[in-house]
Amino acid sequence: MSFREDLQSKEPEFIGDPLIAESMIKGESAALSALRPDVVLHGFWPPASIASRMLGIPTICFLSLPMHPDTLMSRNFLRDIPDPAKLLTYLPRPVRRRLAALIPRRAIAAVPMFAQRNIRVGAERAGWEGVPLQHIWDMLSADLTIVNDLPDFYEDVRLPLGFRLTGPLFASAAGDEEIELGIAALFGPRERRPKVLCTMGSSAKPEQLLAAVAALTGGVARDWNSVIVVPPAICPLELVRRHVGDAEHVYLTDRFVPAPLVNELADVVVSHGGQGTVQTAVSTGTPVVGFGVQTEQQLNLDRVVEAGAGIRLPIHRWKPAAIRRAVNKVLTEPAYEERARLLQRRFAAVDGRTAAGREIWHWLVDEDRTASRHVRQAMHKGAGTSKPKGSLGAVLDGT
Image 1 (spheres, one colour):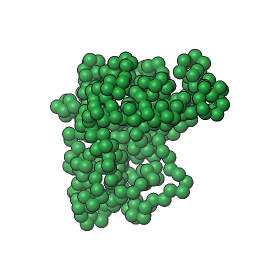
Image 2: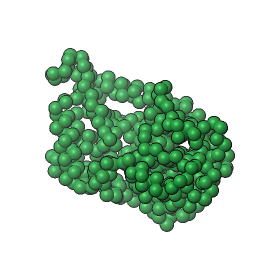
Image 3: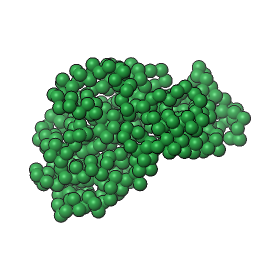
Image 4: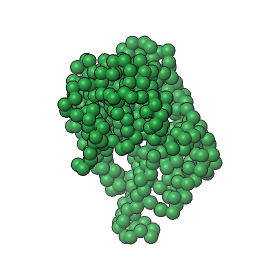
């Protein structure tokens, strides 16, 4: 079951029913009350932030972008027209870029995705009595927010207090990982045909994955070798097999794929725009063709497009013919690979893991912060809990 089914997501609501949101927040509260951590680390998971704050527990949040009104509404933040403005997405990109900078702050704040009414109502029912949770950034507010994106992307964006840009943070290849034989056969060094990797994470919808499948099985794509990852959370492997038929140039798998290793073998990655997927492709110097399921994913891809290392299609134009044209353009124009390599070097110059760890540690021992002072006392005195003296209890919470 995908998280969309589990949470009954209905655009633009991340959680499809206030009752589910209330249940999630109460469940988080019960678990945290039992564990009694000194700090909670969470990602894009509002129930964890809300429950922690209801209990007075300090929080550290990991986000792919600075989720704060001062940043989201700055003139330099949006790099393109958001997909919901459908007609404007057909304008030339330079024009769209200029228009994006002119979007009023109030219009950005009114984007339905930022409201998340069901979470707000669920929090109120669960007992939230703090400041009103009007927007998603209120629901994700933390004592420290780690933004795991390339600092270069934000040179002209002012970060709010409590936010730290630490650099890319994604899973790297383990030394003992092996590539499936079927993937190795199509992506091997002796294969001279262009190699395309399609990977959609878990947030894409079945029809979006199937559109990519159709793009990679017909027309000029018959001259490519394509590996398509089929997450069970999106759709069954057998359904995709029926669409692929007997195409020998396509390999399907629903197993875990060592992404860094396979990305390095590919000539282009077809993606849903998830930050981990995009960063993995960039870290191997592989151009990207994708679409954003949600605003954050559109922004991830826009950064790559701005660097000249890929193509983003608006979600309503994510159709087989358009996907195939975009992939073919990337494969036949060397500039995309050249710029992807340049972006790869920028990524390699930043150690996101070390930077994130350093920021967290500095926050924990900073005497000037009330929340971190509470944590320091827990480290040195046990803070009156049943934990051993000098220990620090932390919970990593999220989806």
